[in-house]
Amino acid sequence: MNTTTQAPTSNQELQMPNKSSLLAGVDMPVFLISGGVLALFAVFALYDIELVSGWVNTAFATSTKLFGAYWQVLLLLTFVIGLFLAVGRTGAVVLGGIKTPEISTFQWISIIMCTLLAGGGVFWAAAEPMAHFTSPPPLFAGEGTETGTTQAAYNALAQSFMHWGFLAWAILGSLTGIVFMYLHYEKGLPLKPRTLLYPVLGERVMKGPLGAIVDSSCVLAVVAGTVGPIGFLGLQVSFGLEKLFGIPNTYGTQVSILLGLIAIYTLSAVSGVNRGIQILSRANVLLAVGLMLFILIFGPTAFIIDGYLHSFGIYMKEFIPMATFRANTGWLDWWTVFFWGWFLGYGPLMAMFVARISRGRTIREMVLLISVVAPVITCFWFTIVGGAGLSFELSNPGVISELFTGFNLPAALLAITEQLPMGFFISVLFLILTTIFVATTGDSMTYAVSMVMTGTDHPQTGVRVFWGVMMGVMAALLISIGSGGISALQSFIVVTAVPVSLVLLPSLWTAPQIANKMAKEQGL
Image: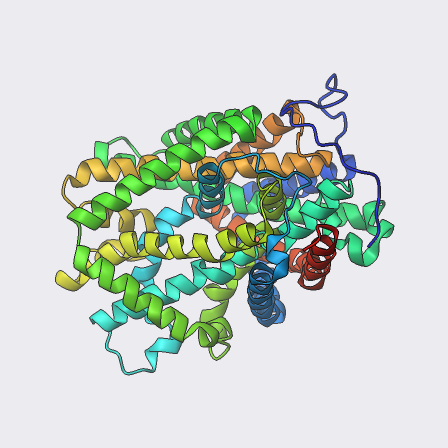
């Protein structure tokens, strides 16, 4: 393992040299490449969205065809290797160059949960189980289970668990977090995606065009993955406000929502990990837990409990068949592989953020939270929201599915909440929850992108403000042409996942090497 000088360990959130200039300390090649590509995407989309959608869809189809199977194997191996590191002697290794955690366990769990789930974790939790219920996945369609039955509902939940469960979470920092924690905090390498390739390529990747391309690809992926939820939030909340309060669903309403969202997550990112991001995540978790308890108590309690246990059992039984399913690539590309590409795109920058907030944690703590605890909680959340919808649909066919027709995600969510006691009030709270969810992703990823630009875990305020505002402005531009612009961008993240997945590959063997090296150094 190559080594350099020790990294600085100052915990002063806003401490940064050369503050006099906005661009001081910024990696200009990465800034210009990533910013330039995003600007061109927005310009072309505004000029001719159909042309851009055609380009993206062609690239999307090529990416899923050539890399879909590789992504499935990559996620599966990441999960398995991470578990082996957690349960063995390497599990006791303390990461980050400090002996005690900087952030309390509750705050740590809250930030990680909120960062990944985002608004998708609300709308998809309502919509995906219903989608698989009305149109059974190929793996379950051949079992003779009739559509519209309780068993079909359990199968639908199990398929949703696969897309949002163990494998999806594992790629977001279980192995890559170990690599970043060692190379940045122990060996002083910059907190950039290219650092993941340092054990393989050495100094060649740290300086020059290759490193800039690696960092830019990862920034593009995560910005596309963050702008998408921001834009969709504007569309979805505006839909909800019209339905609940009669406020016209116009572009002006959508932009007003985005302006409020930009202000919230940018201020949160500026205040830093130890302030705004923690506060926002805490509020998010408390509201989510409150809504979960309400639905569990006053909703279809028996079905939720039975559905979670039974569907999780199916998930575990069919885990390998679902993870390695290749029999129907048409369905696979627009479901499993799409989600895998989405999570892969977030992988490097999410891992950087995980490394930033996990100093003082052991490998066992970090891997088990990311790869086991968080997925189990996520699956329960999907059962609470989506399971309630399935129960209502079974009792009264069409009450949810008819409104969901055309893959209308916000309509599915509101259809579910309106079936609950105090439906109007609960619907409003879910819209607020979704907004906070997206804000927690916006602030975390704004912070992470800023870390890439500066190579430090304390990026200067101006850089955070720039990227926070830029992502919001891009979302506003794209929704001006309707949902097509946002949809094209969301498909684009799967295209960017191709180079990102190659960046993540070496962690399969470098993370175990580092873990064993640190175990020896710490006398374990």
